[in-house]
Length: 122
Image (cartoon, rainbow, N blue to C red; front, side):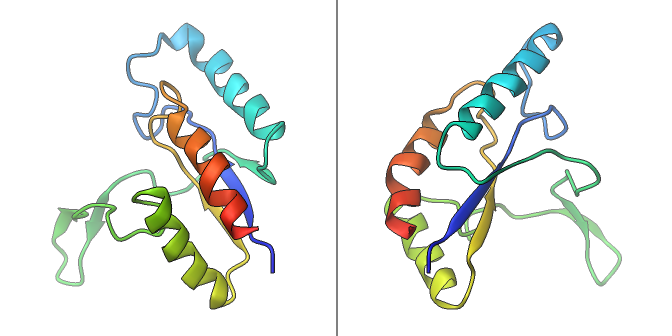
């Protein structure tokens, strides 16, 4: 089974455009979308009404920050990500939507994912 991938494009909702001149936001998003369209990505995603905060309300009613993203399958070295996604693929997952929080400023994470993770799972 081949695994397919989509990618979220930064839009500023998650503070992923901090430090970028607002006049450059559209061109930054457009450049990243064109890059994704010409690469191994099957889809491009933009935020509409998704949760964009790391704050959650627990069963006790207390609001708190999430501890971190360390256990998510897309976090770690390429080898760790491949291992986590391979287990999910073996369990039947065939599609992953990814997000690179610093992509507006630094595409090296996307490049590494494209070169090492995607080929290992296809």
